[in-house]
Length: 315
Image (cartoon, rainbow, N blue to C red; front, side, top):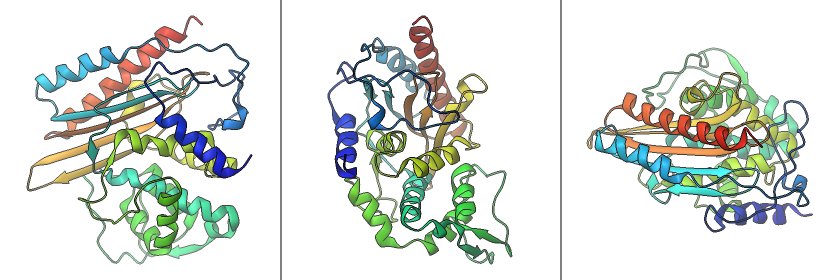
C-alpha cells in the first residue's frame, strides 16, 4: 500500500462528517510496549464498532461559563476519538497564530530527511550564543547553552520538550526552507511565511499533524514514534495537568502576545493515551490573562477525560 494512499486516507478521515460518522474501529489489542503510534494498516475492521456518546454540549456549557466570566475572549476546541473516528469541534474553523505549535511540523520535516539519511540527526551544531530569540512568557526550565555543541536530534528535543526558542532558531539555520515547504505542500497546507499575520491555522487543521503522527502515515513508524516520544516529554502543564498521573500525553503548546491589541493567545494540542482508547484534544484560546487561559485549557481537558473515562470504564 503506497505512502500517498495512506496519507490521503488519513486526511479523508480528518475531514469526514460529524461526530456520528462510523469508522472502522482499531483493534483493542495492546500495542508493543511503549508504542505511541497506531498505523492505519493495523485497523481491524472485524471488531464491533462502538463510539462515545455525544458530549459536546458538556464542553460547550463549560466554555460558555468561562466566556461569561470574562476569563477568555475566545475558545476553539477539536476532539477526536482516535480508535473510532467520531469527533466534535467548537468554533473549530477560527484562525489563530499557532506560534510554537509550528515546531511540530519543523520536527517532522527534519525527521523526514532522516528517513533517507539517518546521519542528519547526528550532525553537530555549535550554539555561539549570538542573536536574539523570540521572547517567551512561559520560560523553559532547560535550554541550550552558549559555547556547546549539540546534535540536531538534541536540538529537536530541546525545541519540543522544553519549547526552547534558542534551539528552534538554531534549527531554522540548519533546515532548508524548501524541505519545510515540501512538508506543508505534501500535507495540503500553504508553506510557512514566518510572518505572524500570514501563518494562521484553525484548531481542526492543526490537529491533523498529530493524527498523521499517530497513524504513521507520513513519517515511517520509527520516526513517528520518535516524534511522539519527544512530544510526550513536553514540560508544559496544560492538557496533561488534568489527567491522572502516569497517563501519557504527547502534546505541544504555543503562546503569542499581541502588544498593541493587548491580547494573548495560548494553545495546547495533543494525544491523551487513555488505556486502549487514545484521543486527540486541541484547545486554542484568546484572552488577556494567561493564567485564566491556562485554567480554561485545563478545565476542558479535565472534563473531556472524565467523560471519556465514564463512558469507557465499564466496557
